Image (cartoon, rainbow, N blue to C red; front, side, top):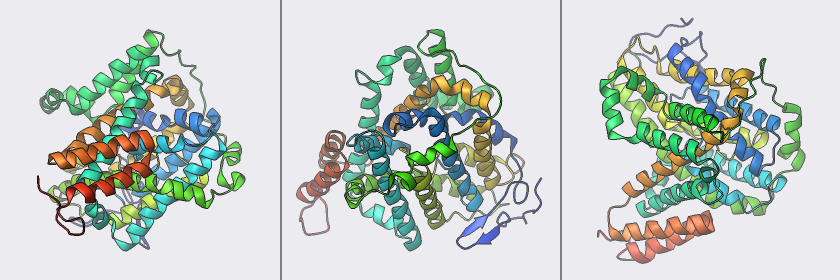
Length: 448
């Protein structure tokens, strides 16, 4: 139960704070046991960033864990400040971010480059949130350019995992099993039909890609592709004191050259993130239309501001290759669906979203859980990137409707993968005006 009770058909109670609406568990909403149990399992995905932190930023494991804790705090902010979306990374942008980071020497140079990128992403979200221009600007971007960005991100994700020295080649059995199960359970028509008619399949579907991850971990351990976990007891001990050696407060802020170099990647990250906003809004608005007992204030500007705040916090206290995204689409979908089903299932959309990441943060404190998954973090990262790659390719191809757009998108994708974000964006803009428009200085693109 919670202290404040909602009036029928009204908003969930809150404390106003400028553009935000503060809600606390047990005060403004009840604790949801289903979301608690989901998060205790699904928090493993948040640990998947550790291999990238170790490789590109050269962080020791205990410092990387401290960075994950900062991310966990950021994950709790949206529900706290009045956002119904369940947050995550900008996962499809990770391959593009890694292409950008590979230009720099691993360690302090890469950290400064990532700080510049994440600050710019935060500022983009902040400016577009304050002005309300986010949706208008993204709508002005040609479909061919959007498609090229998404397809390029998808190709980069798949190449990074499938190349000769990639993780799939190093542990082929575990990742082949895990990827096959992931794709089947997330995208297969037959599994969707099974989940609609079978109670067990429906429960499994609620956990997204985590069941496939766990099976891949067990298989990887059984075939000796991964070592046995050294399970420890007690509480996780992140190296918060040591982590300041890897932050701008000690290393210094990036120079103007790094901010300039990061801008194309920041723009691409926002374009990709906006797709998550569109999908998340559709899920929340559908639930809002069907659950008449609660009115959801689904404010896109507030979502932009909270996402900006999370990215800015990361910039100074834990620069993150995953960046801070507005919505983890898979969990937002399962939360909205459970909320939509009936009032007894989930008391408020905020009780579901809030419980999930508070529980995920608590799971980070549990050393037995963290140490259990430590040897298998590469599996969680690989499956995350493989699924993101598949989604990017699928959604990107849906953006284009004729052969000319497909050609432009293809060139943009190849340039992005081979030469980086700046070349991809630049070539895309040039080709749009050269090939797609009947009049390069007019407004009407060709229709076929």
